[in-house]
Image 1: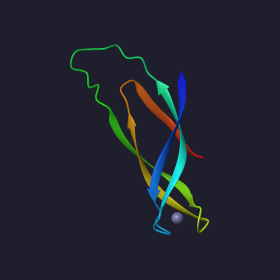
Image 2: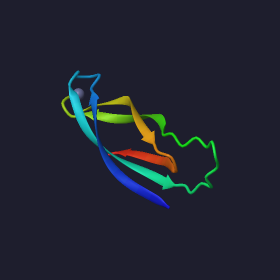
Image 3: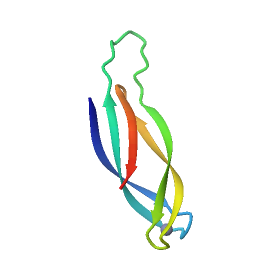
Image 4: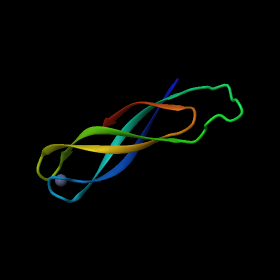
Length: 81
Ligand SMILES: [Zn+2]
């Protein structure tokens, strides 16, 4: 079972030094765990590198985006729109 959600992120552009806002589409799988005592249910912070395009200079750059993976979720993919 997967679920898609769209988020807006703001990145400080390394090319023109302004902030740009991008929409990213995140695909998550939902995992059903058998709960056991002492299980770590805290969210995980994950980092991914993606290519973005500076709308001013029309140049691509790479940036690291940070996402939170909640308990019972697995991030399968991130598309920059
Ligand atoms: Zn820029």
